[in-house]
Length: 431
Ligand SMILES: Cc1ncc(COP(=O)(O)O)c(C=O)c1O
Image: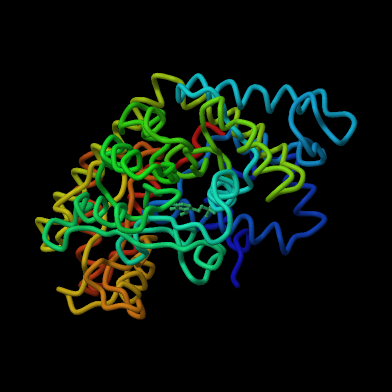
């Protein structure tokens, strides 16, 4: 793989990063120039194109600073005040800050900030509430469910008895009548609400009502939307769910990790499900970086960011529609848009490749209309969390829609324009 730092052009591009981390970076470059080159090349890739992967974002310099800190050295099995290891007084402070900030921000009694990832958080939520073999209802994978919502390739599908609910084929919206019918027929122990690709707000009150009718727990997997909830740009699942699990690195813009929110009655079960049941020592640098991200997410600036993410997505969806790239459900309430590219004679994979060649990063995704089992998928999924962090607004979304349309139709010359647009909005000007 070609790495940065090998030409004056790439050196110029990566200079802000190298300058900001001069001391650490010089050590790395001297000791391991090959890996240093990979780091700079990835920095260049992220900043010299349009990042529309709905699950990604640019964590702040403060978050990155904690991730690259000596907190990464510390072992701290257990919870603040009750650790297996010695010397945990200071990381205890960091974890307590993360917990208190999460509880204040989301209005819940308890938060566990140790899950290594979104998947680990879901695993722990199941471990807290279920036993193997229990029946669970979750969104089916082709309709937007995550691997952890019952895929046979995942622990969830292997260890629990999942039934998938879906969206109405006409509207693309969750079919709450089907959900209720399935709940009454299957009598699940838990219902999971949440998705990797559903662009609309979820009616958590309806989920709660149906869960109560059949005596099921309600688990909300808010991996994608928790940052929008923090910024007041999406409804909160906290008043409705027994347990909310999420990632910290998507719209919440923190380090890569997971978080679980719940009431005091389930706090012990959730904590024991994370450690010692499904995890070992927490990654204290990530826990501390989560505290920093939660501090950022409580600011008015972040609320402005979250609302701008949604405004940008809505403009982008409408502008795509104007190019016959019709968004599923007719638009979005969130950061996320899915589009059927089969009308252009493309598969999701080919579309993703064409966009990548045009320096636009996005994902392919399965659509409810794709034939099962999913082989070739006909959707693409994109999101506005990262470009909004860069400072792009509505007018840039109009431009991105045009670039996307041209890239998908296989036009030449899009990469240069995408790179030019990205370069005008560097994510790390404040490094
Ligand atoms: C709904 C949902 N749940 C869980 C996850 C898993 O998160 P992670 O990749 O951090 O394990 C994702 C990731 O995209 C997701 O979209």
